[in-house]
Image 1 (tube, rainbow, N blue to C red):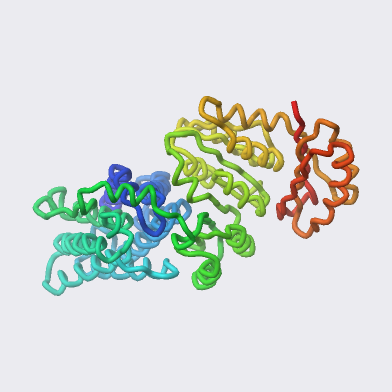
Image 2: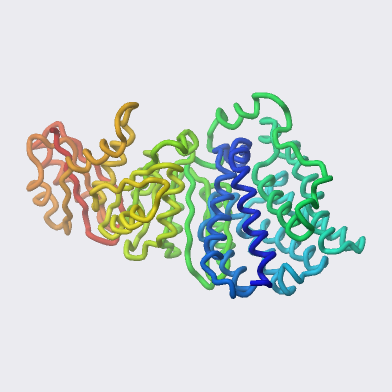
Length: 503
């Protein structure tokens, strides 16, 4: 434990510092998308890293702690900022480990690690932008290098890195147009400075920075910055309406491939990898294409959320989580406001991924609707173990149930209970599956004059023309009913059927 005492103390202090400041960081978040979640994303990323470390025993080596934190932070990375911070810290920690650990590293080792970390942060971003977390990372490395040239010890070198990082943070207000317009500094950069401050205090003592001037995050005392955050015009220039993230396992270096694929469909691309795992992030108006790239690389956990609706939602309200095995359903479900977790093989759902989706949906409560029995079983298990957010798991295990439940959520008005309205929609929907060979006959057995909507979810390779006969049958039995067809993209069954009836 002795060789990891300083390391564990720093990692814990860094997470606590961001937790304490997450509200302020969220409030100044205007880049790359003004969705008020940078502080939350960095905190949750660090929390997952520390959660993995906490599972280790006191006898764990420095290298084991570094590996656990790196894996946990990568798997739990949230948003563009979380991906960059996870890559930055992984590179820094790995470099420190090769120098004997945080307790034994010298000034040159600190400076070298900060330089490698800055390089890693730049590599994680498809199109680097100055005036951001990247600029601060590079400034911290230079500050440390200059201190080494001046023959400073490691404690003074860590403090010098903070001084340089703070100076660079102050300049982000002028370098980044959106930050200048909002009267703030860059939120991601401020989050990284907190990590460096905790590093300096861990190495040089809690009073190491007491005599230094801090940087004001709200540069100008005016309401303009708050308006800039919440009333910004969310256009394609801001990077797309949807955020897609996925994790995959591969021993190949996929950074360039994934970056190129995702930059062709969106912005704010960040790709990071460690220990055979890769995390990718993109903002896009075409989330189905991002999901297709993820599936092509055999990603097993894919997160999709509507950035605009997530920005407008209150973290203190009840969120909606949709669990689906149909890749093609990610976009329509996210467009309706759900946090979507795509799991192509439901038996491979990771508890970490489910926990993450729930946290992304709300800080207090969430309704979970699942499109497969295995997904629902996992949600029920999580609900039994969690206190917060409070989970309500609907009695649903069919993709058509997911569709109707999420649709019902969009119609809930003040005074109505979200979970009840969603549950009622599920209860009013008949479900079945078909091989597709006799689809019209399978649907005929389910419809009558009260039918209002027939939903068909098609597997990969099934042509939409199979729905033609169904439309004729439905028109004959229930002339006013709608037939909605979705390209689910699941492996099987060929067609999933849902039938909603009037009460």
